[in-house]
Amino acid sequence: MGAFPSVSRDARIWLAVGAILFFIGIGNLYLGVKKLQYYREASVALNPKSSTLFSKGGVAELLKEESLQIEQVKFHSKMRAIMQFYRFVVFGGEVLIVLGLFPLIFARFLSEKKRV
Image 1: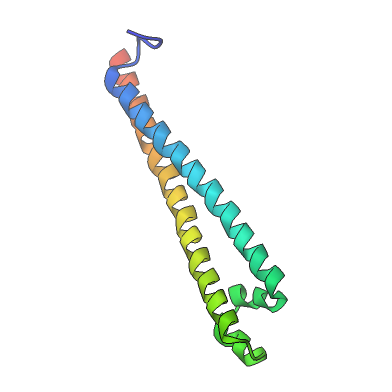
Image 2 (image 1 turned 90 degrees about the vertical axis):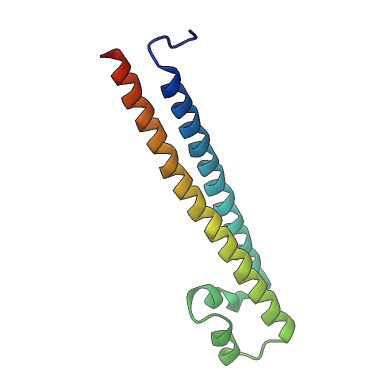
């Protein structure tokens, strides 16, 4: 019956599903945070005033402070879109981690039910 004879087949399946979701969530979280950090540092390195782009009013705030070229505005708009995507990836990773915990808990209850 395998390495864990006291654990039912259903519990093992739920355990596998939970572990897969959990580790995909960890991967998403890691990837998203690394990419967000990279794009934020790249944006600030290219334009030191761009740090206000992510904390205050965005492009409109920068246009008030200095006259930016159209290319810079397009660049910052693309950066914001990319960063928004990676924020979504981070959020998705957090959701997958939480969703991965539910099958793990359910598998625990299934294995306890079989022992009784």
